[in-house]
Image (cartoon, rainbow, N blue to C red):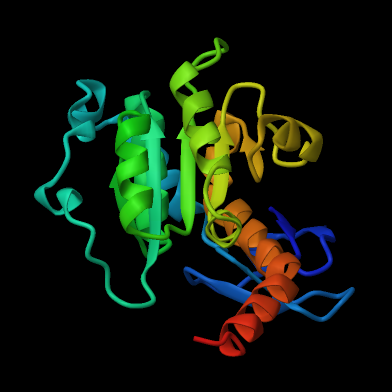
Amino acid sequence: MKVTCGNCGQSYNIDTTKLPAGDKITTPCPKCKASIVFSSDKNIKKTFMTEVAGDEAVKEGLSHKKLDSEYYEFFESGKLTSIIYAKDPYNYEVLKRSLHFMKYEIRTVQNNYELMERLNYHDYDLLVLNQSSMEADEEIATMISTVHHLSRDKRRKLFVLYVLPQGNTSNTYLAFSLGVNMTMSPEELEDFVDIITAALQLQDITYRPFTTALGRSSDNMLY
């Protein structure tokens, strides 16, 4: 398994057969000594794929049906929150189950209007956009434009992941050109939990000086 340190960006290949069983493993980075957190149980992620492939509701597109709870924007304090836009039922279900495993509260949007409503009432942590074909999805382009118009602090809090056939987690230029934080190919979804965990750790470290300065300026603001 390949894991990446969210502090220094160094990647390591780890033999998971020699690790103890458990949903989460924390180990120090050999290079910078920061903590690397990842899932050691590949069966957990493969279970997502197996369950989804055999789920009749997914095949019929019924998994996109919203639950009553999705119409409300109340979240417990400190709760991780995410939004998913995915037309492909299979990828949608894998993303949903992966985020649920990561303890995220999940909301689904079908278009840019619904996204704007969500972002207007809550500062989300993660936005996942899934393009199911090689052809560009105009709805996604509009959503990315909406994200660009968020206030600076709100945009920096929101991590935008774009899943598309030509995506690549290591291609930072592609992500930059598309206006998102990271791109991912559908083939990489099996390692979604580990990839996103490392990416969010790196983002937290990258923007920590900004958030610290923002907090200080707020504290010193005169009313």
